[in-house]
Length: 180
Length: 155
Image (cartoon, rainbow over the protein chains, first blue to last red):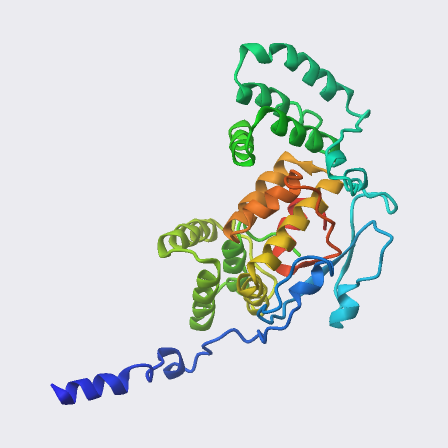
């Protein structure tokens, strides 16, 4: 019995079938863990100090912001293909929603979406006859009518969720239902 | 960056089959990828079965180089090993970046499936739908997000 235990102990962790086959047992890429991912985030993001260090390959995209003060590639010394976003170079579509005043965060300024506003007004008249989810679903169904979800529509939905007491999880469930 | 599969594992599978053969090393590397993604054996088997079906029909997408698999696994492991705040923050900002450009139904659906397997669907969705405020855009994206970014017309 003691002999068997000893043999088992010797076997444990010593026979590597891949080593026996001459097969590499870990990815050949250095995964030496630096804070490469952290550089994608702003300095003011809440990043714990005890993060594991990781390196990873990155793909650069050029975004339409003027503040070029944190260039992850400069920080990492990493180059990558440059890909331009599909939007104009000087406009941040969400800038209007990023005011410091939290109360104004979800103010809707989307005159370009009059049909959505109208749908909301029409829906408001029907709200008394349907549950909150049903009312929200009506609004939700209008946002992809033009094929593209834009910040004004998303802001409107966020406000409606707030007004109707719809949770974000319920919202996602409704989106799933809507898209099938 | 081509989209080789609907999920990160399917993408890795296509990279493993880049030269139309699977070596023992590549099989092991897929084990590593499976572990990094937290996939069960049955979930992996479904993906492999679907892919092998396409292979036999000659319809499977193939990577351009088998060496890309190691880089791919590296990128996925980098995300899965990162602190949750970092990976979630990146996912949230990916969603917010996509919203700035405009999100199509197809883009939302495809990227959601992708981010779900990475375990980052919640923060990604929050970024897309401005839940909890507006996240700043990304200036660069991790390789593991690149196919999702392409689905979202960011690349």
